[in-house]
Length: 295
Ligand SMILES: [Fe+2]
Image (cartoon, rainbow, N blue to C red; front, side, top):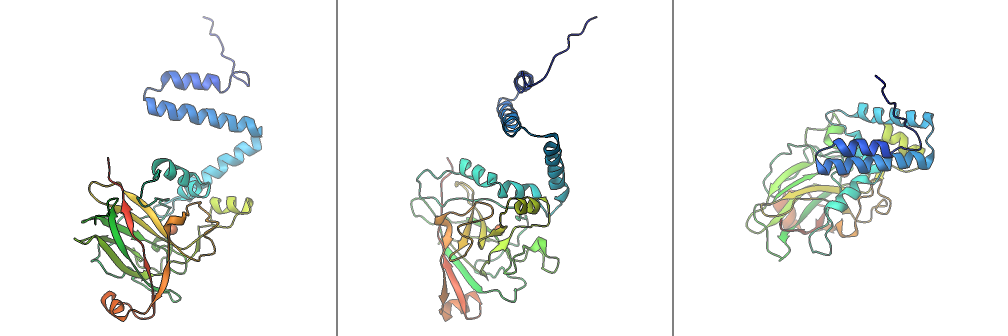
């Protein structure tokens, strides 16, 4: 028996690979994704004339990214974030197309299930940071017709004023600076916290090496993270950024949007301080969320 040898080389790559995957991949969406991925991957290698050393350095880099991941460290999300891919995927999937709904932005690598369910108005600070500025965050959650959304769940998480999320700092209580609130009849939300400060994304892993090699700083402007859900509405994953932050024009993960900046102001409202159980002085930010109806 004579077996015909198929020759592979520059003359038929990636076409031969695309043909093989195109013929055999049954699921149409998966097929489309695979063929496009192979096309772009080969085009990239040809474009830069990738050397064998560079190819292996890339393999080692991705291996290190995987090895850096554990239950609380997600180096792949960080890689996606710092390459702008997460922001692009968010934009593709949540293009507001001129609607009035609040813009979304990236999830980031520090979301953890299990935030405590708190009564509206609670303080999400379990352990205060020495330099933390007390803050009250409040606003409406409404639909695009301006009607309050009853029973919306607001999941909030943030870093401390020292720049760490609870899972990054073993001296911090579990789920410090996180909480879940549900809106009542008025659709309003309000809670007390510390004003979020700018912080660096983790730089002690391969993504940090990449940022240094590319001459990029690792800083993110201060922000609160939110996931807001309500029956009949699209899930909103977004931030409120801290105004006047020096990194608003150079977010390490390309996630800032003008419409998501909240104005923190000094507040002298003693009645509010008493109601919210916060000591004076504190700052207040009012930010209204608008959810789009799910179709
Ligand atoms: Fe964050």
